[in-house]
Image (cartoon, one colour):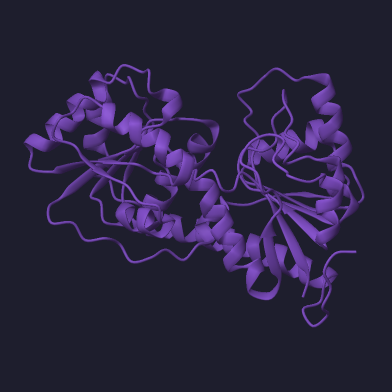
Length: 337
């Protein structure tokens, strides 16, 4: 087996990133020794030089999430020290709505992606893949696949006593006018639903989002929280409807067959809902038509469309694991160099 370093936004408790960590642990980690490379949850992210840390790994997997940012670079994700070992980039996205490209950042990204030790690049959507091909011109093909959270096996759905509608908030959108969402919450409550404010994060993210949840001006809300990613997922599975600021809240709800109105209509959300033929459910925190979209959300989730995404993500993960296995046969024991 090999010792594989995992590079990503792991440990802060952001729901989607922790799902990616679970994915790597439950796939690559079945046959290889995996560990997160950073040990500090603040810049510079390492208690020792990265050049020393990389010696402890045979290879690195970078991803997923929106890690390829054209106007700033993270010493966690695109550290030059990583280039000393084989690198597999998988599940990454590009926030293509950022139009400013910092020349020094772009040069650094180009040098990284074009390096001969980069063995694999997998992008979460077509737009991200096209951007990487156009601006970074890597030497290896850029493959496109569904968000890798679709590869996960989810826990059983929670059981609630009453029909339940949930919403989630984010700290960086806490300043938006809550009127539209409060009106939706009141309408659903009047119709007999329990209204849950689901704190969709753990650790530091949970702490910040919990403050935002507690400040939300709807007195009849039920706040649900947990330090278990699996428990948060099970809550999503037990809902009748989700109103979501968090992309991976929508992803996991969709996997359970729970309809989700999207309040953060970013590129990744638009791409997903285009593929699922659910674009009318894209909304925003201050959307005056939010209630109409909640009504429309009774349209069922296509199990066939979800299954296609699951198969796509499963194939992408198996392809990555096969490439790692080819470079590091499972019977051979090695750790760093």
